[in-house]
Image 1 (cartoon, one colour):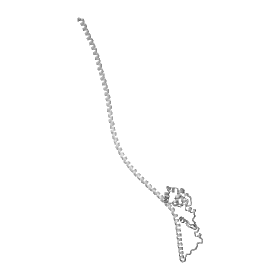
Image 2: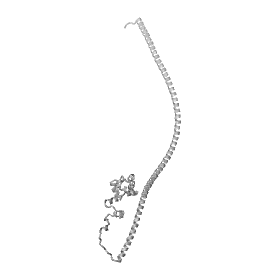
Image 3: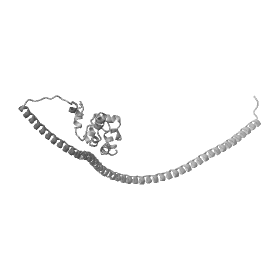
Image 4: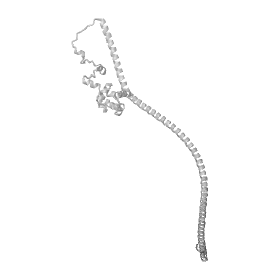
Length: 308
């Protein structure tokens, strides 16, 4: 074992002292660094707290502004709510007024509809009355035409009656003369026997007249010394007129009229409304045509010797 000397101890003590000084210096430096770090950390925390406080202050201001705005908005909303309430009340009042007006208008409309129905009924009644008046006027015109036809037919009928009456009187006179002659012959026969003499001239018995089987020939033409009945075609032409001369009458219509017993112009001139209806039954659709083409007027003109 080496010998421990004082120098060695001194060196050890110096080394320990130097080590202690170095350690103390290093510890002081580390403490300084730690203090600086702690101070920096605390400064950062302080700055952070300051910034946070400033942020909170700004946020508080913002919140205060928002609260102010919200209070103002709330007040505005309350005002608007009050205005809306008043508007709602006014609208409710207006609605009630409108409902009353609607009821009044509905009542007026019902009254107008009732009046319109009444007017329609009155108009329909007036239309029916007008139709009845037109029918009556048409009946009056038809009866007037018939009356005019009868007025026009009466004078010829009266004249014909006078002629027939005079003819009847003449026939009665002839009959009385024949009866007197018959009585004379009866008296003569009672006085003596009847004497039959032979006929020396048979032609004188006929007196130039031939026999006929047509019964209408004896009815339409009578023997007269001043007028002799025409014979053959002249006789047939004397019985009928040419109805086709009248405008609107053709061969087929003339045949139909002949079938209805119309042969003369005078017969067409004397047509009554009933006769026209009877013709229209055979000639469909000719009722208005007879008046439109004036058959009666044309026949009157031809019967009077004129033109249609």
